[in-house]
Structures are given as structure tokens and as C-alpha cells.
Image (cartoon, rainbow, N blue to C red; front, side, top):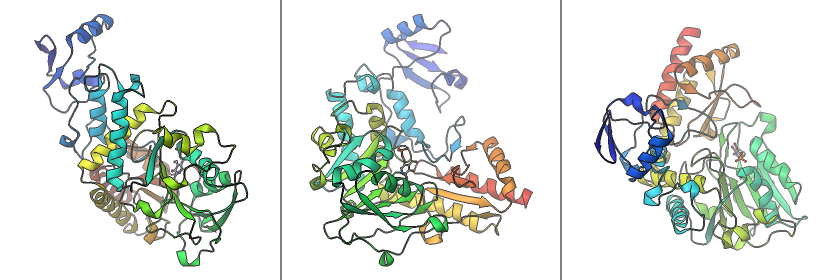
Amino acid sequence: MAATSSNSLLLKNPNLHSNGFSLKNPTTKLTFPSSHFTAQSRLNKSMSITCAATQSKDLSTNNSTTPSQDRVFNFAAGPATLPENVLQKAESELVNWRNSGMSVMEMSHRGKDFVSIIEKAESDLRTLLNIPSDYAVLFLQGGATTQFASIPLNLCNPNDSVDYIVTGSWGDKAFKEAQKYCKPNVIWSGKSEKYTKIPSFDDLKQNPDAKYLHICANETIHGVEFKDYPTPKNKDGILIADMSSNFCSKPVDVSKFGIIYAGAQKNVGPSGVTIVIIRKDLIGNAQDITPVMLDYKIHAENNSLYNTPPCYGIYMCGLVFEDLVNQGGLVEVEKRNMKKAEILYNAIDGSGGFYRCPVEKSVRSLMNVPFTLEKSELEAELIKEATKEKMVQLKGHRSVGGMRASIYNAMPLAGVEKLVTFMKDFQSRHA
Ligand SMILES: Cc1ncc(COP(=O)(O)O)c(C=O)c1O
């Protein structure tokens, strides 16, 4: 390591950057404000390098599909893998965001820097999903689970009827929560068929007075995804979708929905941020008992800054949105997702029954691929061997068992290819 000037260093040994850096180039120039460097040197006796990078990385320059050597392919359902170039950009801005002299974590949420971050995040999301101007975008807290209550509290009186199509555990949870605040009906449930199907929309017995029709667009646990959307029978009713696990995975016609909501931690950021896209005329009708934090009107009037928002999470979502825009938007993102899913489902279906996906083919999720092994006693071994090969979190949800590979936007094609090669090899050794 040689100092090249008072405030820069040349790292020649890649092992030197185990302390917070993941650098691809063997020789990388790091730039430090000299005062920061001196202070850190005094604090850290065994000198580790802390970098207050003054230049942020250009997101568009690093769309690598192979992760750095120290990263695994993470097939978790959420929190889930994030784009490595986004993580690297966040790393480069962690200590000193764009010459502000502080981290995003330290900023006032009402200051101009953070306001620029949340505005850019919203603007990129609007671009990605082509969100009409009569829709508000809210960045909230409480996870999608909180929305299970917020929705009926904001849209219904206690005696109002609403309809739920239950295609999996999350839709069921949403329905159960709504029972506290209005009169929900399950108009279709896939439970008896172990949540492997989506109903035909013609057969639905919708209540003509239902204020809304609720669906879970992608059931994360069961791997069942709506490919098209039902229309509410009530002409004044609206369609509401929990898109937590397929948010921004493909283009969506937002105008078909009254509300779209999603927890960020699968496709667009870390946990702690919940995004609500809501048609503006639906705002302002909350029940009197609605807690202030669940009232859409309060959040909309305050541009999601009524109280301290999850600032760092919103910043991370913003980086992901920017990255998706740079990738060519959701049309391109969907193409990649379809390719990844096709490779994996083909491997399962072509295994002669060694692997099996229980979900009806036409509604298989592009994001969450559940599968079982004919010899279920081999499941633990498969997980163990895959983990050794740096492919982790393949265990199915505890409520259904088996395996599940979540292949969200940020899972590179290389990860799916590696998994499929491994699965074929595993089969040849254990068939
Ligand atoms: C489809 C779906 N809805 C809702 C939730 C609950 O989200 P949260 O944990 O953010 O409350 C999840 C979480 O995995 C989910 O996958």
C-alpha cells in the first residue's frame, strides 16, 4: 500500500479490503478527505481503512451478472438479494453522501438533501410503472402487514362489504385482518387445492356492493401469480393488490387498481419501507378510529414526511429504482425474469419427476419457485450441498415445506444457471 498524495491511497493487495470494501480491481484508488483520514488513523490503532468517498459510483457502469467472490447466490424470499452494483453505490456513499459531509442515515428528513432523495425515488418509480398523475405514491412503515388493516380503515365503514380472493397465506392474512374493520367475504379460496391455482374470473361470485376486491398478486409462499387481473363487479368498487413479492418485476397498468401496495424487501430495497400507490380520490375517508400513522390522508398531505420516515430504506429503494430505469425499465426487467423462470421451471419439469412444482403451469410465479423432491428425505441433503456451493436459502416456507427458490429482479441469470446445473448434478448422483 502506498500513499500517492495526502488524501489518496493505492491498494494493491485485494485482501486489504476485507474491512468493508469489496473491490473488483486489483489496484483501486480511494480518495479521502485528509482530515477524516487522520481522525480515523488516530482512532483505529490497527489501521483499518475507512473511506469517506467523495465521488459516488455511477450505477449504470456496473451491471455485472456474476457476484463478487465473497457473495453467495441468495434465493431467500425476503429480505432478499439486492443488486450488487446498488450495494456498492450505497457503500461508496455511506459515510459522505455526495459531499453533504454526512450519511443519509444522519440527515434531517426535512432537509433539502433528503427531500431530493425521496423526490427522485418517487419520480423514478413513477417512470418505471408509468403511474398516472391522479395517483399518490406513499413511502410508509409497518410492512405490508400494516396495510392489511390500513386498507379497510381508510376505505370502509364498519358495515361495508368487501371481497377477497384468497390464493395463498398472505391473502388469507389480509382477509382475517380486515374482519376487524369491515365485512369482508372470501369469494374464492384455493386452500383446498393447497393454493396452486388462480380462479377463472368468470366464475367469481363477486358481491355487487363490495367496496373493493382484494388480491395478492403474487403469493410468495406458494408461488402462485396473477397473470391478468379481475375487474370489480361494483362499478364504484376498486381492485386492490398486494404486490409485495412481484413489485416492479414487470410492467403493470396501474390505472386498473385503486391501490397497489408492497413491502420493499423482496424486489426494491431493504425491509422497513412499504410503498402504497393510491388513486387520490380514495384518500380522506378514514374511519374515526384510524391511528394517525395509518391514515393515508396524513401521509399524502405531508409527502410521506409526517413523521420520521425510514430514510435510509427509502434512499436504497431510490437506488434500486434508478438501477431499474438504467436497465431499460420494466419491459426489459420482465424479459430477464421470464428467462430465469423458464430455465428453472424447465429443469424441474424435465427432471422426470425427481423435482416437482405443484403450481398450475399457467399461473406459476416468475419470482418464487416452490418445488419438492420425489424423495423428500433428500431435501436436507440438497440444501446442505447447495449451501456449500454458495447457493443459500432454498428451504421452502415452514408452513409448506419442500424447497423454494426466490428469483427476484436482483438474482442474476448466472445464479439460476448455477442452481439448475447443481440440481441436475444432484439428481444424477441421487436418482
Ligand atoms: C405477498 C406478501 N404480502 C405481505 C407480506 C408481509 O410483509 P411484511 O413482512 O412487510 O409485513 C409478505 C411478506 O413476506 C408477502 O410476501
